[in-house]
Image (cartoon, rainbow, N blue to C red; front, side, top):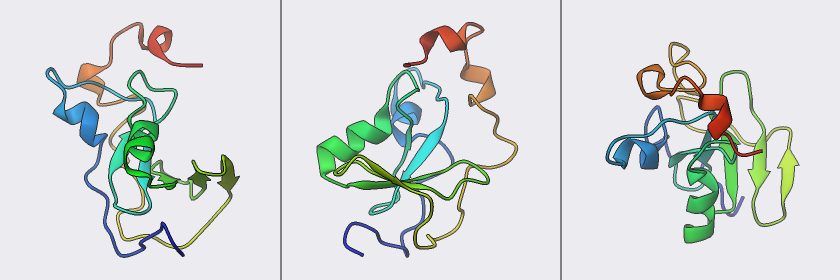
Length: 116
């Protein structure tokens, strides 16, 4: 399917852009670009890097990078799909990595920083 490359592994275990910030930031939930594998933070996260990546690159599809979730989102059509093709492992963030995360960077008032 155009816009989805099942062979590309995820870029890492957390939001690549939050990790690159100085100082590094935190995220609420993670999304994985289905075209290039870049892991970004969700639209509820303070930095909304997954949708920023889609806008900057034209990569339309993301898949949840959360354990137990296999849904895809199409930024182009603004449609959610309950499932899609299997993607290269790993399929989700490490189970030891909590939400929000990473724990050492999450402020005590984290819920006040979420986008609604």
